[in-house]
Structure formats: C-alpha cells, structure tokens
Length: 186
Image 1 (cartoon, rainbow, N blue to C red):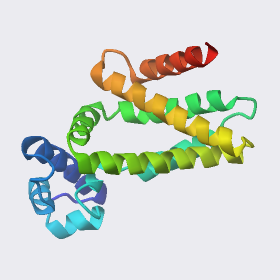
Image 2: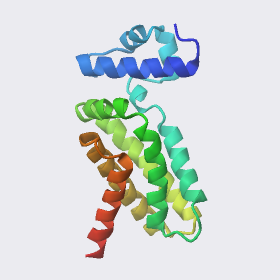
Image 3: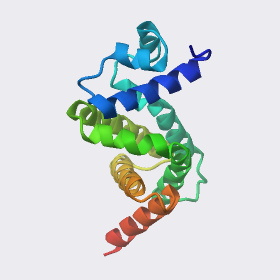
Image 4: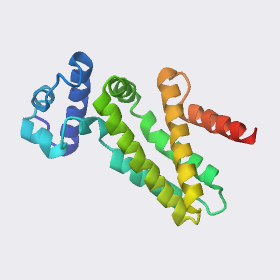
C-alpha cells in the first residue's frame, strides 16, 4: 500500500495506463485501476473524479506554470517570443515523463471520450495563456490568436517528439516555432 498521496497518484496513473493499453479505456473500471495500483477504490476517487481524469493529472499545474511563465517573461519580448519561452519551460517538465507521455497519447488518440476530454483541456489551456498575454498588454484578438497558435505549435512539437525521441522535445519545439515563423513570413 502506498504511504504518500503522491505515490498513490503515481501508481494510479501507471496502473490506469497499463490497463487502458491492455484492455482499452471502455473495458477498464476504476476498481480495476485501484486494484492494480494496490489501493482501494475509495482512494482512487479521493485522487481522481473519474477514470478519464487519471490521464490528465497535472493539467492544472501546467496551466498555472504556463500563466506564470507568460506573466514573468521579460517585458521586451514579443508575444511570439513569450510563448516560445513559456512552452520551452513546460517542455522541460514533459520531457522528464517521456516513458509515460508516448503511451498516454496513444490511448487518448484511440479513445473518443478521451479525445473529447483532451480538447476541453486544450480550451482551458489556451484561455489561460490568452489571459496571461492580455495581462501583459496584448489586445484581446491577438492574445487569443497567439494562444491558440502557440498551443497548436506546441502540440505539433510534442507529437513530433513522441514519434522521434532521438531529438529532444526542446529541439522539436524550436523547429516547430521556426517553421511557424517561416510560414507567417511568406
């Protein structure tokens, strides 16, 4: 039995991912996840409201980190540079979890209910980034466009990294933002 809440959350995340890959999301119950993790079902629901959320653990922390990175970026940076800097900071944390990230994306891609949840989370993330840009004095329309474009570019880089981990996520992210810059220059 895990002694700490953080350890229980980690074990629940890993157990859920294993079971989703083995059986599929729809065929897996929260009770089965809890049993695989060595905890009871009540412990599962103490940490996660439902079996979808176990794959999105840390999303609120990501939103807060991105907002903080945008807000604290040097004033002389353009919105494009602010976003690149913020997403690079976020990428450092994601890179540490590559063995979990790649299979997680596969499970989400194969499961309509999880894709829907992922899209809802993306909306919250882009709204958070747009709001942080507005606090920096960026106008509403440009802040929204920059946040959506920046997030799409980040997601593109993450997908490229999952497909090719021989290069760092940071390298894929720099490439994606360079490609975006070149695309918009034409």
